[in-house]
Amino acid sequence: MEIKILGTGCAGCNALYETTKQAVAELALNANIVKVEDMMQIINYNVLSLPGLVIDEKVVSAGKKLSLAEVKELLLKK
Image (cartoon, rainbow, N blue to C red):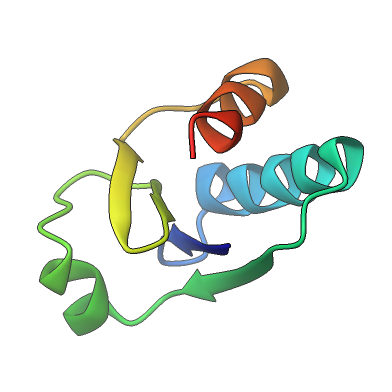
């Protein structure tokens, strides 16, 4: 599973990155987590509000502060 956190390094983007790392660890998933901070790459996902969460190249959330439970739910849907 490949997970991308789309964001420019803002507090919300960093929080989503940490929450996602925690969710992956708690669920014992085999996943690669990558921060994407380049605006041209972010634009390619058609995400206009940050942070964005991409799982296996599918945007599953944009512009929302997700809780640990919400991130876990999105990961388990994959």
